[in-house]
Length: 113
Image 1 (cartoon, rainbow, N blue to C red):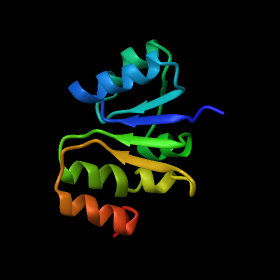
Image 2: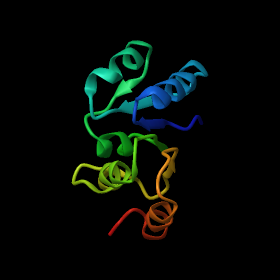
Image 3: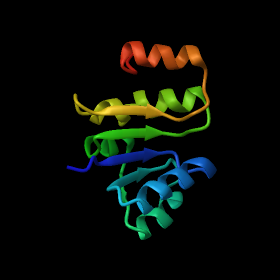
Image 4: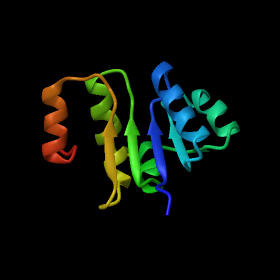
């Protein structure tokens, strides 16, 4: 079985990373705060998600690549964030360049406060 991948954050780095995953044949769902950034990947075969929670509910592995610590925390913890849709057996990988202490906190608490 192929893992279903989800990718959040389709800026300069994230769109390239997500595009590579899609070109390698991975089933991919994408989400971005600016929905227009999803268009090229959806046209190439990715599925677009309505929210981070929707993406998490459809993904075995959730990847995050956003700009800073508050954005990672928001994507995880907002009411329609990753944690609202994350399945118990899913994996979250954060590619963002953020505070190491915030990363450890999210890891220890499962992203919950």
